[in-house]
Image 1: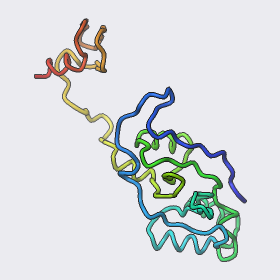
Image 2: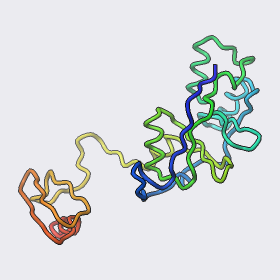
Image 3: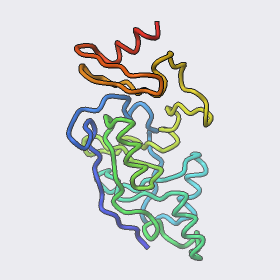
Image 4: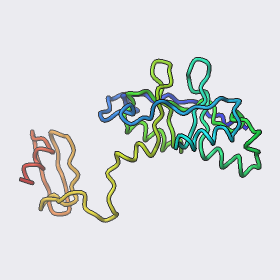
Length: 196
């Protein structure tokens, strides 16, 4: 059973409106070389490659080196539940065909959004028509700044509690402890001046 979904190429450096997106790129985090398998390998062979490499997926590349499929731990669980025999079932029957890919300069934010939107955990990285790496949800989560629920991210100066400050030159800001009105000042600079 081949899982066919339309491939989506993630735009490397822009958001949905075409604006540049700053930040780290998947090239900073990706694993390379990619653990791969052939479409005519058995599920058992692919699973063995994953275990030996300590990874959760193998990429199946075509003759040109482009990803034509990806087989993940989830696919192996699905195959097992369906009664597939790992020693005889082929990767091609259980892989997700034409996986979404990212470029090496795709920002971490864009890659994370792509994985979250599609429910994937792995995103092959292709540069100039060649498979150069793979980035996983685990790789991306290493950058996340997680803290326990309820823990304050930073000390909030009196008067700015409940205020979210953004880059702007003109605006009114209402917070839980007051109201700020500023013109011809950066909101970020204003907030920083109140901290010090």
